[in-house]
Structures are given as structure tokens and as C-alpha cells.
Length: 510
Ligand SMILES: *[C@@H]1O[C@H](CO)[C@@H](O)[C@H](O)[C@H]1NC(C)=O
Image (cartoon, rainbow, N blue to C red):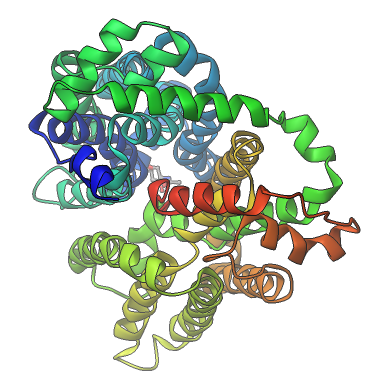
């Protein structure tokens, strides 16, 4: 015991590790959040530009429906791009490396940034729509690659803390777009092209600075077989010379992962013993997105306008919501680790459901009661809080806990696809819902929250401090399979999953 203590040095946060974390999170995750919220504030001016462009081209004013379609495409091409981006992750990270992919990914940011910047001069809204798709690819890639890169360069004892940095930067990106979107800053008829183009700044910073930092040592060692560079990188990251132990740990880990094998997505879909676990992560990811959280970020201003907030005050309310989101993301980390997943998810969806119902009521009475707009704003903020404590972060955590290492990549592939496609659906459909149903569109969101809540109540067990085996036993009856306990399996899974639980934690608010 004593000898062990002497040989395990305390892995500290070195300057190289800190800077690599901050630069990649700013260059990639920040951008991701920024582009989620960037179209919200200038919506009015961008629509006016679409209208004017159309008028000039065809000599007649644009039809209301066609404008709504163009607009919802401009918004929703982003998550659709995200879907394709997340499909490109596996081949790119293996070919170019983790850092390499992050650097390469900036093509998908700088090119569309220039396109969006010149769209007004080029008099083309098509350019914006295509650019949103490309910048979505960037987001889909970075939402997966940043956590991977950071997970692989940080020592085990810091992985949990460093793992939340990307999520934090996403929310800061959202907040920054909301701040820049204030009318007096860039959210006006002349500033919006610059505002859209600014996404190139974090990309440029990353391109200039990240090359000076090490590639993931694990990638270099295992996939490239380049021990020399891996050792050098690890020495810089750890701030000391003796990294033999960690390098051999990586090899052992890799071997045990290889021994366990790797399940393909197709194999996962047809595996009976994992069926209800799979359905559960699909339902939770759909619930997370279809409950309307991104509708709030994409269309916050128009929601507040409907809620009767004075036009000039809307921007500040929007910024306030973003700030609450940043704060709750930090708080969520502590809450998630302290309470059970199930309770948080149930209460999160419950709060969101209630907030949507109350919002609908408030929107309907706002003309007769003067203080109703305040109730509406409170509802939105309560909704954001409710989403941040449960529906946002937990599906990711539960996906990690329900699947063994061998099935995890496939499970994340499925979860990620469901996530982006649902996000795309909300972005595309919400403007039409808003036009046709008005304030009642939130009833749909509350129903989705309720359905997801009931599903979780009935099907999803508590996964905190449970081993993979215990979880699969809970599901065994539903899956119609018998679980045989293999000797020696339990303790192995326990340590492995226990470690992974906090390491791979990432709150996905988007
Ligand atoms: C488009 O612009 C014209 C004139 O500027 C305006 O009358 C019309 O209402 C606008 N159309 C839409 C759908 O906003």
C-alpha cells in the first residue's frame, strides 16, 4: 500500500494541459454553441433581407409561407449538418488523429463563415442555407471529437472535471451569441452578416494555436504505434519525464478493450439482450430534443415577443436565459453526481412539462392580465433550469452506464443520430407550429415531456452505482432473455464502469 502511494504521483493540471483544453474548447465547442444561438437575434433583419432579395429577383414580394420555409431551413440545416458531421467522426479521428480532426474541422467553419459574411453582397439566401449546413458538420464533428481529445490527454483523476469544459464552452458560446445579438452591438440590419461570420474567429485561434500542442498520446501509441512522439507529448502534458507507467496502462487498457470486442451498430440493433436499453436511449434522446429546448434557443426572441415582452427588452431577457443556462450547467455537474439519474430525469421532464403548460395558459391570458408577460418569462427560465438538471445531461450519462465498453461506440452512434435528427425536426417544424398553433405549440412540447416522463417512470431503472450486470438483469425480463452470471465478471465491470462514470460525464444541453 505504502509502495503504491509512493509510485503514483499526483497528476496535476499542467499549463500545457490547461491551454490545450481551453484552446480546443474555445475553438470548437464555443463555436458549436455560438452557431446554435446566432440566428435568433438577427432573425428579423435576415428575413427582411430574404424578402428584399426575393423582391429584387422576381419583382414580387415573397409569400409568407415560403419565407417561413426559407427561414426554418436556414435554422435547421445546422442540426442536419450536425447529423452528417457525427457520421464522419469515426473515419476522421482514425485517419487524422484527434487534434488533426479538430484542425481539419476548421475548414467547415471558415468556409461557411466567409460564405455567410458575403451572402448579403452576393444577394443570396441560398448561400446562408448551404453555409448553415456546412457549419453544422463542424458542430457534429466537434461535439464528438473535443470530448474524445480531452478525455485522452487528461489524466484519470482530472477527466471528470475536464470533461465538463466542452459543455461549459457550448453554453458560453450560446451566451456570447446572445450578447452580440443585442441591437446596439450586432443584432441589427448592418451587423448581422458580421455576426454570422464571427464564427471564424475561434476557428482561426484554434488553427493558429492548437498545432503547438500535443496530439492525443493514446492515439499516437495505439493507432499509430509511434511511441516516441506519444512519450514526448505525454511528458509535456504531465510536466514530468517518467511516463512509462501511463504508457503501459494505455496498452493494457487497449488490450482489454480489444479482448472484449466491438459491437457494430447493426449487431447492436439486433441484439435481444440490449433491446430495451437501446429503446430507452432512443426515447431519452428524442425526449431531450423534441421537448423543445432548442426551439427556445433558435427562436427565443419570437417566443418572448409572443409572450408580450416589449421589443426592446427581449434581447436582455434572452441574455438572461443564456446566463441561467451557463450557471445551471455548472450546478448540474454537482447535482448529477449527488442524486440518482432517474429522479433527476423524472423531475426535469416534470418541470419542463409543467412550465410548458403554464406558459400556454400565460400566453392565452396575457392580453387581459398585465403581469402575465412576467409569468411567461418565468416559465421559460424554469423550463431552462428543468432541462439543465435532467433531460440535457442525463441521457449521455445513462448511455455510458447502460452499455458495456464493447457496445458503447455503437450505442453512442445511435444516440447521436437520434439527437441530431430530432434537433433538426424541431428546428424545421417549430416555425410552422408557431404560425399555425400560436401559443398552443407549447402544449405539444409538454405532451412530449409527459410521454418521456411516463416511459422513464415505467422502464428506466436507476443506474447510479449499478454495475452493467445489475442493469442488464433489471432489463432481462423485459428483453425476454436470461442473464447468466459469469464468474469474475462482476468486479471487472464494476471498477471499469465506476471509473468511466465520472470520467466520461458530459452534460449535453443541445
Ligand atoms: C416583404 O417586404 C414588403 C415590402 O418591403 C412588405 O410589404 C411585405 O410585407 C414583406 N413580406 C413578408 C412576408 O414579410
